[in-house]
Length: 106
Image (cartoon, rainbow, N blue to C red):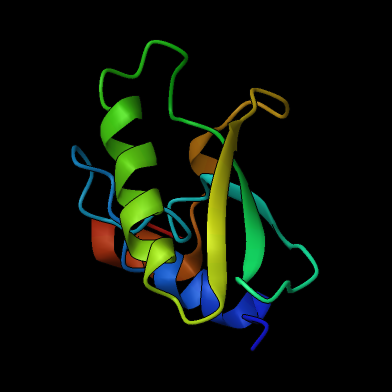
């Protein structure tokens, strides 16, 4: 069974930045998800994300949480994470829901 992009994003919404109480998707850190073709063992999922800063001390923790949460999605065989820096993250990438959770003005 091939996992859908929607299922992957739903799982990513359960991953939180350890320093900011908002999930990675609503924080605007996830730039894209690719679900490879399903093999008998499952599909490979690649998550492209950025961090709030290049020196983020929680990067390993964030990647490990992504790995843990996506490995339990039915049909996922392997998870790759690719940290990218372009475009650079900025607060304008936070979703309306993330802004609400952070109590930021729209």
